[in-house]
Image (tube, rainbow, N blue to C red):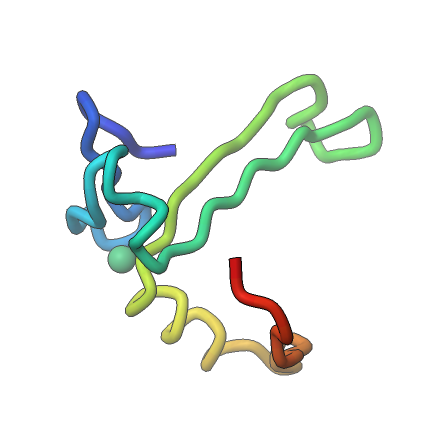
Length: 76
Ligand SMILES: [Zn+2]
């Protein structure tokens, strides 16, 4: 998680994504991972990060296997 005050920054490029108040209307990825006992020296820690949409697109392009994509029938 990269947040200063109420501003959310992209952990990858450091760019400003949006403010806390705007986050429901912004497109970005938030990952929060609780590492357990079977992890490699990260057990008992939580890693959180925010990734902007541009970095997400670059990240996904580098995948050997693309993410599963499904149509959302009901938007929130
Ligand atoms: Zn970024």
